[in-house]
Length: 477
Image 1 (cartoon, rainbow, N blue to C red):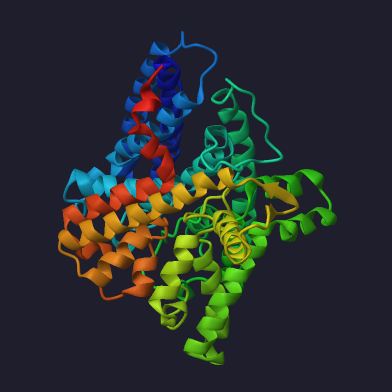
Image 2: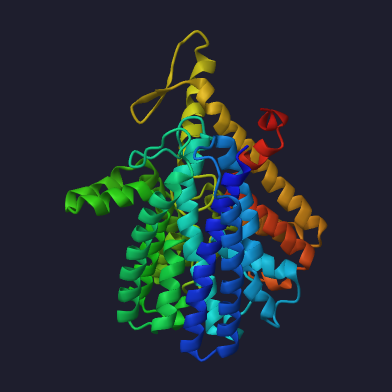
């Protein structure tokens, strides 16, 4: 295993997050928060130094790597980065322990959006830090989906494959920067356009900036407590909802639309089967919301349906999507968005493939001697290709069950444990408030937060990647 090459890229990751700390520290001076600014600048210096040392150690790394190296890097990255990004939280009196700080950092980095903190009591620099963590986490999620998960081929039939980005064997890590740069430019452009429209609509600049960063990453953390309607206009929240849907959309399709520079390319957004699936889920939630709240709250239901389906989960108004039965909200959150996106969940394409395979198997039961291949998007898919998807579905269910059981054992009521586990595993933190508003993350004990942290990391890493590390065959030469 190329440990030195893994170290090299971990060093690059540390330097990247040190730059984000530098930006936050400089912003802290503009906010007049000199103590927080000095802290961020000091941490930026320390982490940059550590990153340079690690990259120096790995500078003689081999130029090629295998999928095993990529998998180990993927897991170490998601566990290590919250250890670094949680350091600013430790300076807050509202954070009583390292476990809580790690929970906050992991929630922001994985774009889950769960928090024990009240944003009204936080310094602006910390709120900006949360927003930057979510935005950068979204870039990382999309980049890893396109590069690492596609190379690992965890899905068997190419759930994470992209027609835009091609990879050669042994050149996985070398494509991280180039592809990550493209995705960062794309998400940065969408965030900038969203920021301009939201601010023009009347939202203060700081709040508009934070919301635009967290919307494209489908993060869910907000710069103020309470509902969005208190400081975002009806037009501004529509822009925000559309930005969240773009974050849950296939990033390779979005890049292709941007690259082609014509209106005909926009039609590709609706040709994608996952995007049609997203719209179908939004329509289902709108109908359910209309039946639950009536026509008077239809606009709120429309907006919050887009928020929930994209796994962002912002709360726009007091009466809205939270009136829909909790079981439906949990089910749709677990489905998630596009595979090549920042959204969490099982992913729409996996569910579509599983239903197609199930329907074919039911047909075979009524006609045992009939040869009927599985067709999907004009392709014939062999039965053995579905094995990894069924394994993923089983693993996802297993982790969900583990989360519920562990949370219930830690002291949560069973109903609360179900909602909290679904929120963490689907990386939709605000789902807990939408389904069980009587409990908040701040009400949970440290053990419950530790369990939620593990579950949200498993949901973001992709469960089969973690399970593979425990297979003896994985470590054999």
